[in-house]
Image: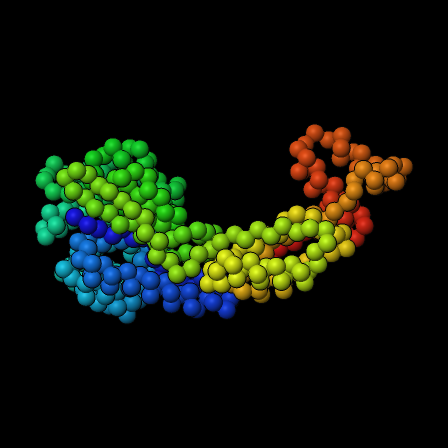
Length: 354
């Protein structure tokens, strides 16, 4: 049996709200998911596992009708899905009485249930969130039935507020595959367990490649492969300053690096290294270069500590330098304290972030 395991789609989310690309990103999240469904139908995938948070918040009836149409259109592909902590089935939720297509199998309650998909001789176990938080380890005692066929657990959680999961214990439970959701970073824990991660990155902390898990289950076991699918990535871009670099030069260098790395991606920029003590980088200007999500200035003003101490050994500057050198700490921390302290004495400036 061939399957696709996807999770944390978050349709309806507007990443980096207020940025020029925010609405486009919201559209891309939906387009990537629906494009994946269409491709799964073309390739004749047997089963799609959706491990929670299809939507970023409880869906409207219109959104569910659209989703159902997309899922029905790829039949005979079978779909097993659940609600996560974002699109949970609260009081009055449109999930509660929604009528799904025949090929869609949706868990409707916050209690582990099992669905038998006869066409695939497959048992899928799971539940849906009825609350934003579930602190009980609801999957700990779930075990596959003693029946022929493939046995898959669909699960969403993994932290103390969202169904804690003991991975080793769950691995030993005997399922052919455990399809996990909630953690946005993809991770193949073993050939029988994986976090698919978010299909598209949702915020600036979702750095790196995002996509889905492709798997095959046979009598010889389960094989998994992570497949990148996101249209963009959040990336950290570290720029090393030197003592001769002006704010304009830093801006030009940032533009060049974004062009090299890929203008479509989204960047958390970190400035490091040393700068002239009279230079302050314009973080507002840097934050408007390309798709820059954030800029953090960790540069240090450059000082010749030994020369400064020799020239100021009898005054406050010299006393400060001497005191810091007498304190037990690593050299990087010592340089930070000396640089920021001396800069404050000279100009009253400090590092900042945008």
